Amino acid sequence: MAGRFAGKVAFVTGGSRGIGKGIVELFAEEGAKVAIIDLNEEALSQTANELREKGHDVYAKVANVVNAEEVENVAKEIVETFGSLDILVNNAGVIRDNLLFKMTDSDWQAVMDVHLKGSFHAARAAQKYMVQNKYGRIINISSTSALGNRGQANYAAAKAGLQGFTKTLAIELGRYGITTNCVAPGFIETDMTKQTAERIGISFEQLIQASVANIPVGRSGKPADIANAVAFFADEKSSFINGQVIYVAGGPKC
Ligand SMILES: NC(=O)c1ccc[n+]([C@@H]2O[C@H](COP(=O)([O-])OP(=O)(O)OC[C@H]3O[C@@H](n4cnc5c(N)ncnc54)[C@H](O)[C@@H]3O)[C@@H](O)[C@H]2O)c1
Image (cartoon, rainbow, N blue to C red):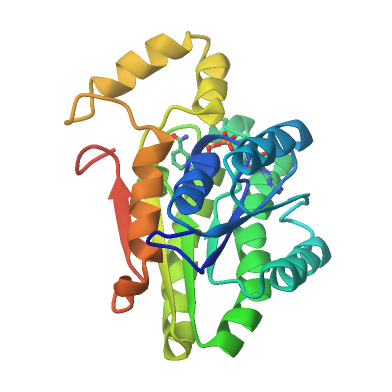
């Protein structure tokens, strides 16, 4: 298939819905073979079927980024299926929001595990094949919450941690033709932000309106807005852009 990512294999964690799905769709539409893992079996098979119906090559598996062995096996299977692993997007994420005094140990740990340990597992598994191939693009999904957000001590710490992780991989892996960058979204309409509306007891429409009031471009973000920034870093031509964080939030502040 022709396109900007023709001949490339893109692996997106948590790619069955929301931002991850938007990223997978863009890669597939622009010619990549795509690999998705997710915990949500129903959303995963629906997304995989949609893509296959459009004629795209898809690898899809229920797997947990927190489980190192599962992630290692997935990376191996992707390479066995498609011949390489060129692009990794660490997108899988969860929120367990609460003010600090109410935040439990498990709220803290769940968020650290999925975002930080999960990204570590997938990057470690993928780099093996990327180093052999002397080519790779790793993109980590951070958040404007990395700059601080009420009720998100766990999530803000994890998303800021991902930025340090990104810069370190950029230094370690750059010599092998692998770049590592970070996309930090602001408010994006997905099931995750629906969950936030439920938690604070307002409708999703009300949350969107309240968010848009503080977004200079006057609209909320959509998964395609993030996919577009991910594609920029994933492009073969972006080989001199390494260890960077781009905020995609409709303005300079969250
Ligand atoms: N929506 C936003 O406003 C926003 C803003 C900034 C950053 N982000 C980040 O973008 C990413 C995608 O968020 P989204 O809004 O699309 O959320 P979402 O909840 O719609 O999608 C997240 C996906 O990750 C999967 N997932 C969760 N834990 C997993 C695990 N252990 N292993 C494998 N898959 C797992 C979920 O099943 C789900 O399909 C997350 O990292 C999130 O933190 C979102």
